[in-house]
Image (tube, rainbow, N blue to C red):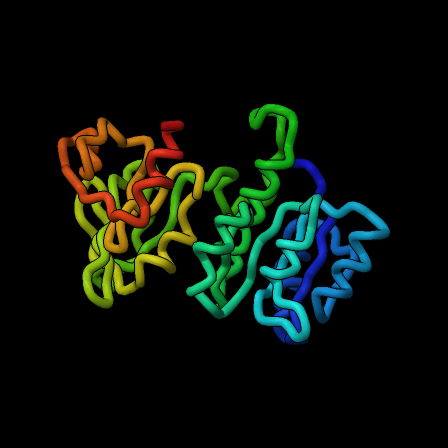
Length: 239
């Protein structure tokens, strides 16, 4: 697996220590700096190129998102934050992943694997595995449904539906999950999943056709396209 240099940026010492401890479990990652604010990150990036940035959003003087907007050349960025409401803006800035505190080592590794996949230039079958405890791809996620942790193949998901304080994950069977749509979206690859309505996220690979303001999936399920989302949906299919 390709080695990546990385920066940890967080104003909370405990948060930096946790990320550093997770990084120690991944031999292919090397920390070049731990920064307490965005200006320290800028200073490092002016001196050297870095492959990966673990970035908190809520930092003093300059927020993580403001830092991203100021960078002309960005490394892979994994946002680490306690605030789910910035997820959409984060992905609009093309971040690699969005981790909500507190996050597990397994979820952390999934994000790192995304970054490594983006950076690598040789075929997967020529790569070594980062760790034997986690899949070398991000094709599966864990969801908590009916008091059980369920491993779910990402591509088996047709769409996700908001349902009060829960979501319905529609795959081969429907899973009811105690999580918000916005938070769950951060766990899915942005290259495949997109929001088409305030109440719906869809698997773009399952699109059959668009009929007016309806998004029709391969199984003929019809979902509404929200007015504020229509332009981004059409842009996704280059129309």
